[in-house]
Length: 263
Figure 1 (cartoon, rainbow, N blue to C red):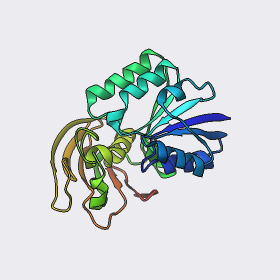
Figure 2 (figure 1 turned 90 degrees about the horizontal axis):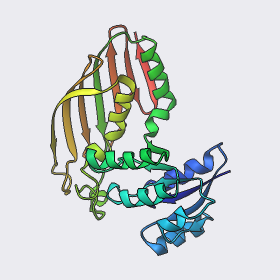
Figure 3 (figure 1 turned 135 degrees about the horizontal axis):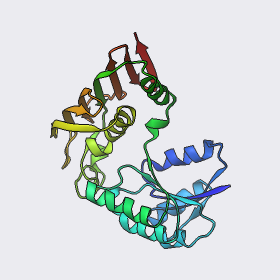
């Protein structure tokens, strides 16, 4: 049995709870911690687990095998430092931090102490994603020519009305760092690094937020492919994100967890 502490009880907490309960890896949600003590206590009672009062209490509990860190990115570093000092492995929600320098510091803190750090990019683990990566590596598509990334999601204004949501201070940005990050990560996992970018980011008339809810980009990849991206949370009623890859032998379309390869 591996005992897990969950820090952060926002939107994604129920997803982690479901994953733990459905896992065949003998996992147990041992305890939780949120910013609101009353909500933390209610969540613990509802899910028959323990409510912790502080990060230090989690760090000092020898029963905890690893910690899922699902706070907003502006609340990460101090928590990580406490957990690392106690040698608690961490599975962290994306993004690591709000900018590259701060994210690099968190990685270095864990690396220096030899404490395992994982980032949640669950799209890589989907069966169709793994199948597409295997096809690319086997040369099924031939040389990769183009890639098209689409993230046509929808969020209503209530989503951005949550304190700090869509701000640079708390989230580090808008649709790019909070939503499109999954599709970008998957594209680079499949095809390798992006080497140059031309882009624009805007806030549409459909939302009130500090950062962007629409982004468009053209980019070059190290593998020689050229690519395009459109990502938004202003595409009502919202559709599945897609990746379309054109090779010299075949094309591949990944969407809604379904892979289609055409020769």
